[in-house]
Amino acid sequence: MTDDFFARLPKAELHLHIEGTLEPEMMVALAARNRVSIPFRSVEQVRAAYRFTDLQSFLDIYYAGADVLRTEDDFHDLALAYFDRAAADGVVHAEIFFDPQTHIHRGIPMQVVIEGLFAAIDTARERHGMTVELILSYLRHLDEEDAFATLKAAEPWLDRIIGVGLDSSEVGHPPAKFARVFAASRERGLKLCAHAGEEGPPAYIHEALDVLRVDRIDHGNRALEDPALVARLAREAMTLTVCPLSNVALRNVARIEDHPIDRMLDRGLRATVHSDDPAYFGGYIAENFRAVAQARGLSREQVVTLARNSFLSAFLSDEALAGHLAHLDAFVRDAA
Ligand code: HPA
Ligand SMILES: [Zn+2]
Image (cartoon, rainbow, N blue to C red; front, side, top):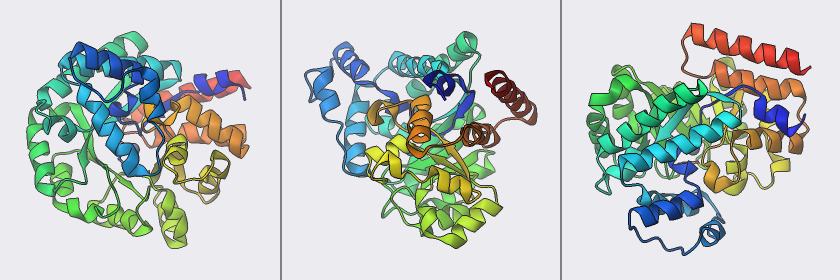
C-alpha cells in the first residue's frame, strides 16, 4: 500500500481536538497578530518543546498554546486550515472535539469560539464537500458544576452540536464524576463520547459504559487488560477511537511496532484510527493509518476495515452512511 493509497482511502475523522491542530507556525503567527506573549521565540523552539512523558506533560503545553486563540477569525482560521489538511488526507466526514472551558476560563465567550468554527465548517462543505459535526468536550479536571455551566452557555447553538465528550487529565477524574451532566446532555438529544482507558484503568471504561451510557469510547486501549470487558465491547459493537501516534507520543505504547491495533481487530473490537492532536503528535490521519499499518504489517483488508469502521461509528443518517460505504467500496474496487 502506497502513501497515496492511505491518503486517498475515504475515511471519517472521529477523534480530533481542534485545539490540537494548532501548528507551531500558526501559534507564532497568532501570537504576533493578537500581541500575546508565548514562551517561544521561533517555530523551531515551539517544536523542540514537544517532547512528552505522559498525558499531563502534553496537556500543560496544549492549554498554554491555546492562549493565542482570541477572536472569531482565529477559530475560523485554525479550523479551516485543519479542514484543508484533512481533505488532502481523504477525510470526507469529521466529528471534531472542541474544549469551550479552555477558552471561557480565559475570558473568550462561547459565541466567539462557536461562530468561528461554524464559519469554517460552512466553507469546508462548499470547498471540499466535507461534512463536519462539533462535539463539545467537557474538561474532566474541572468540576461537574462547571460542565453544567458550559452546557447552559452552549444552549443557543445545541441544534448544531451533535454531542458531548469528556477529555483532559484522566486519572483521578473517573467518568462517574460527570454522571448528571451526561444524563442532562442525553436528555437534550446529544450523543455521548468519553475518553476512557487512555491512562485510566479498565474500570473507567466500565463506568463510561454503565454510568455515562456513552455511544463511543475514545482511546480505550487499556480495555485489553480486562478480557471480560473486551468480550463485552465486542458483543456491543462499541467503537474505540484509537490514535496510534498519540499513544506513542504520550508513552501509552512504547513503540509504534508494539501498537495493539491488530490485536483489537482480532478480538472483534470495533476499532477505528484517528489523529487526536496532530500538530503535537507528528501526523494527521493518513499518517496514523500508514504508520500503524506499516509497523504492524496490516493487510489491505484490515486497513479497509478500519476505514469502514470509521463510517459505521460516525453519527450519520442511514442515508449518509450508505453513501459513504458505497464510495468506500468503489474506491477499494478501483484500487485493486
Ligand atoms: O488525548 C487526549 N486525552 C485527554 N485529553 C485530551 N485533550 C486533548 N487531547 C487529549
Ligand atoms: Zn483525545
